[in-house]
Image (cartoon, rainbow, N blue to C red; front, side):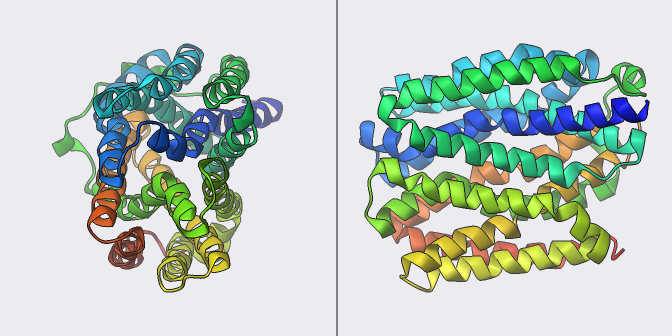
Length: 380
């Protein structure tokens, strides 16, 4: 690939990493509104929120096979418009089962798009000897933050219309960018490779996945419950609480934008332990003080703290094999993202029995485990 094509591929995949999750960010900002509209308790909301990870996680393996066959470009062209439609379904929900089903359909669609994004970025890193994964995921977090901010800002025109405008615009731009992506060397070999059984996969893949699993527990908890927590602590309305997601996602993005540089300076193990340490401090800020400013500091530190985990895992999984990148990434993600299945609902159930503050304090042991598991990465 020429230098111009490499630059074009890098810019386009980073743009896609920002455009795809804008729909997700818009939905996260609307969780308090949906909770109030359907008159759900925290426990009921926790059950409904299971819909997205319950569908997303098992769909990842199917998505890896489809993406390997048709390629990331066609995946973006087909699935981004579908994501726009499915992102509106939660507003049509009338009960817990219908909200669960709406989120399940959205989660299955997101699975295909996530595999396509990470597969292309992983192949590009290897093919062109680049180091871009952390920044790509920085743009993903930025997209979540932009989506949640725009949804909060446009709340006045109507929640459903605001989400539609955000999703339609990002999908249109994403389809264009996806079709413009240059073809990478090795895509033909990946399309012909036969899927492997779990027993045939490298053991290192599962160690990497466990590290990312512990990080994802905290990330999922913040993504789904930050706005609800701020609404309780601040006492503002549902239309203001979405700023918590914006703060968290903004610092998540910032950590990922500097992640590639920090990895070069500290090594993978060093940057993993540094960021996890910041997340531990952030949990203390959220749970050990009643100060609203400290609450925002906590969201910021946890955003920085969980920022590098998933990009480190994706790059490591993609580098294990030259023809099974999509399956390696999907398997790692399936294990790691199961944290989104257990984490947010568990937060809701614990908060129902005790309080949301106590539930957030429960993130501390998992982050300590992540600090220890960072030894899976090389020191330099």
